[in-house]
Image 1 (cartoon, one colour):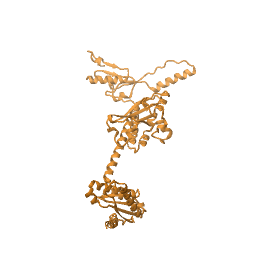
Image 2 (cartoon, rainbow, N blue to C red):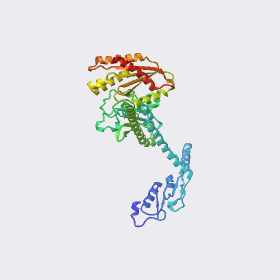
Image 3 (cartoon, rainbow, N blue to C red):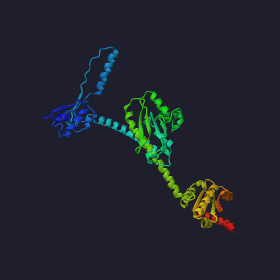
Image 4 (cartoon, rainbow, N blue to C red):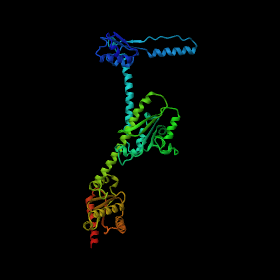
Length: 455
């Protein structure tokens, strides 16, 4: 068309062999400032749906597929009956439209829109399903759940191999410089056939399922537990496709597709599936790392840095949760106070670092001596206490605290002994219970023992 425009005289009409040619011819003419149909007439051939959505709408002809099918069937039946088959001519139906100067026309408007809608929503359904796969992967709580989320009818005949290092929670895999990245530990986390057969009972797949111990790990990229499986797929004779998985420009593994048919939509969808899985794995790793950071921040907010026990704020939240549990009402509640003896002497004589060490030792012994469900707290300085819900023996706990400290002193090379004064108070947890009054009562009993030690 561009070559025709270089001529001195333009043609009166351009008759195209198909509609796509006609649409492109109209585009070139319009770009050159030539009006269709005022200056040049254009027509196409085939009757594609697209001709009704261009400007101008393209004049064309249509070979009715129903007439073509009838003619083909009639020819087959004649051959089966042994009758001679003669040529059959089907006259295309004219579709006059704007590009040749006819009035604007849309053929079978409702049917046309229905076909376009079906085509549009089919792709929309694919996008929605892949989005759900990505979302489910990102919001999973464990690598196992994340891998299980991959399995879907859109991911049939598919293997997913991922570097297991990305699931380590101590640091964000995608923030590590490439130069510091350890050797990849590629692992098969999804095999569509295996998942279908076992109904998610064992996903991610254990290495033993496809592990070939005879393979040298340095042999090739296909070394590892998935190598035998991929060789098995190669031997099946179907073509296999490999797509790299990457997130934030960092490779994390690959997908392997082993379609058992030549349906073109499978191949065209593969890139979208790979993108969805890459985003799902990357989002999961980021979310997992964020949870770790939030847990660390939460622990820092709720726990005392020196002893690891609850601080005031952390205890108040934890104890509020205890009070909210109806099953705790009416049960015994015990408060055990533990106060380091001679803290001022240790600080003044050996330094505050040794004083902190002594406080941490008493706190550790208090926590170890109480039940695992106890709420152990450092309110400040050497003020330590534990709250125990349910039956317990305070005297035995206090005796254990003293015994553990004596054992520590026996094996310690410190120039001072670490001891604590302890007091306990037990009552019933009900609506009248006041934690402050219970602490005062335990503190009073603790000072009775402390004064006895001083004398």
